[in-house]
Image (cartoon, rainbow, N blue to C red; front, side, top):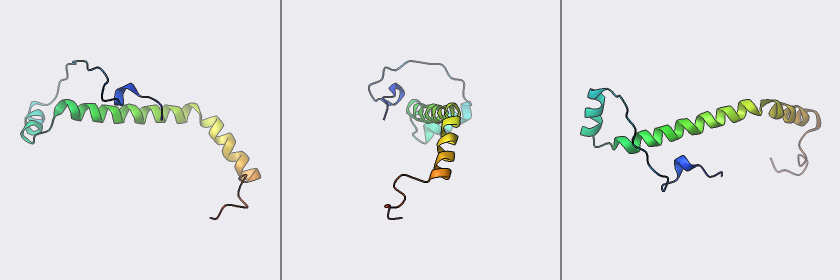
Length: 83
């Protein structure tokens, strides 16, 4: 897996300002949620999902070409695979 600085526990932290619903923040705190940790986890998930979406879009032509090749010629080990 590629090194992703936003996922490393030792990555430096940066203070940011967010505007969130006061009622929602109060409820989250009442439930014992760590807002910084929660937002960081969700932001990391969103960044990873966007990175994957962009990679698929940037590589769509190559993926389609490989799929077409496989449709025409089959897979290299198709005759020996157990499934």
